[in-house]
Length: 109
Image 1 (cartoon, rainbow, N blue to C red):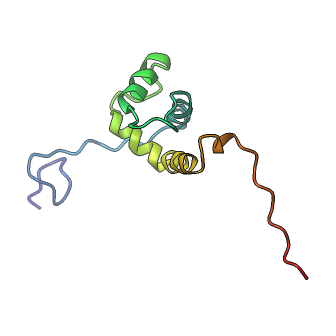
Image 2: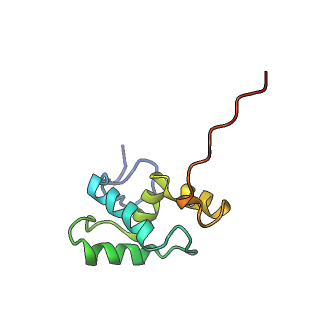
């Protein structure tokens, strides 16, 4: 059709979409590690730029150069880190370190 080269169908003319680059296992592991070590479970708002800068400083070359702070936030959400952190907050700050709940008792006979 009449779509501009490199643009997604139905997108505004001139708005080029960047190529999709899947996250590597190393990127996922680093995001998960930094989420915990930077205190993102309890911290609000979460400074995603701090995570990106820390990753680039402490583990150069692991996070792809094209990644933005928003990409890290979106990946953390896709990994379930945000939902788990919110559940931890609702259940008390120590919920992540608490021992597992005992199994339910069987019904009486």
